[in-house]
Amino acid sequence: MKRLPRWIEYGAFSLALLAGIVNAVGVMGVAPHALSHLSGTASWLGVSVWQSGAEVLHLTFVIISFVCGSALSGVVLSGRDVRAGRHYDELLIVEGIFLLVAFMALSKGYNFGVYFASAACGLQNALATHYSNAIVRTTHVTGIFTDLGLMLGGWLRGKRFDVRKARLFGLIIAGFISGGIIGAKLYLSVGLLTLLLPALLCFCLAAMYRVLLRPS
Image (cartoon, rainbow, N blue to C red):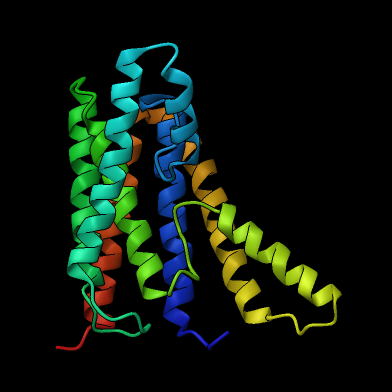
């Protein structure tokens, strides 16, 4: 694996932590299903076809919102090389705004807030996937565990084990699980206010990127 800048590792951990918090809120209350990835949502959509038309519509909008968030990243970003100077900060600000809208809508009882939370996750996942050529995914860990399994199998066959890539994957897994722990604890304590934390993290990451990495 090409040596990644240290800021990529820190950013991947932070984004995974952020997504883990949002997903915990979705699973525990506002959805209730995963918001940071669509595998479970697609399964629930299939099941709901035979149970509830309203649920089918809701889950369809969740999926569409995720795709729309990803599309927004696709419109803004160009070039796939990992380096400072891209538009990551603008997209992180938009993600934070989406999460704030989700919080405000849900706190007033409007269920469409879920769609903004899903769009925020889609935007983030596309951002991370784009700048890493699909090496890094920060809103789910299925692919990460699969890649680790492949690496382990290759090592058992005598292939060199890529310690740097394994370290990156470990940071993402640790971030996502830690986010789930934090999100669940906060949701039990303060409810929807939990969504303000990942929104704040988005703004902080955007500010750090702009100040430390983005050229003037």
